[in-house]
Length: 192
Ligand SMILES: CC(C)(COP(=O)(O)OP(=O)(O)OC[C@H]1O[C@@H](n2cnc3c(N)ncnc32)[C@H](O)[C@@H]1OP(=O)(O)O)[C@@H](O)C(=O)NCCC(=O)NCCS
Image (cartoon, rainbow, N blue to C red; front, side, top):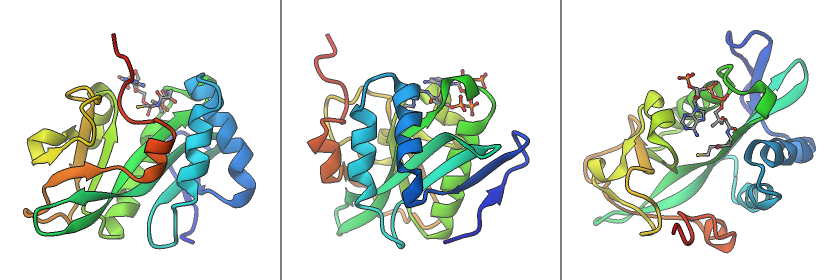
C-alpha cells in the first residue's frame, strides 16, 4: 500500500487508503453526507468487494484522527470499437457536513486522480454536477466521444476526464459494473 500522504491543505489532514477497520467510519460519512439512509453505504459495501490491489481505490481523509471524508473509484468497462477497456468510475464522494467547504473533497478527488494516472488508468467517469467537477478537469463525456450507460443520466451530468494513458481509439459506451445496477444507483429514477 502506498504511504499515506499529508496534504498541506487543510492543515492537519491526512489522505490514506481505507483499511478494513474503517468500514463503519466510511458508512457514517456517507450516511451524514448524503442524508439518504443507508443506500450509499450499501453501494460502497458492494463496490468495495470489486477493489483489488491492481484496480480501484478507496481513499479517506482524516482530520486529527477522525475520518471526515471518503472517495471511491472502481473498475468499469468502456465498450470501445476495438475492444473492452478497463476504466474507473468515481462514486461516491462524501464529506461530513460540518467539514464541507474546506477543500477536503477536492483533496480526495485530486489525490485519487493522481494515483490512477500513475496506474495508467486511461479514463475516469462520474455522474455529478459539472459546477463542482469541472475544477478537476472533468468535461461532458459526450464531448470526448463517450456514451452514457443509461438514458436516465441527465445530459451534462455524465462526465469524464482522460488521463495520460488514454489513446484516441478509446471511445465508446461506458458499462457500469454490476453493483451500480444491483443498487439501482444509475441516473435518476422518475425525474418527473
Ligand atoms: C460534494 C462534496 C463531496 C464536496 O466536498 P467539500 O469538501 O465540501 O468540497 P470542497 O471544499 O473541495 O469544495 C467546495 C466547493 O464545492 C462546491 N460544491 C460542493 N458540492 C457541490 C455540488 N453538489 N454541486 C456544485 N458545487 C458543489 C461548494 O459550493 C464549494 O464551492 P466554492 O469552492 O466555489 O466555494 C460534499 O459537499 C458532500 O459530501 N456533499 C454531499 C454528498 C454529495 O453530494 N456527493 C457528491 C455526489 S455527485
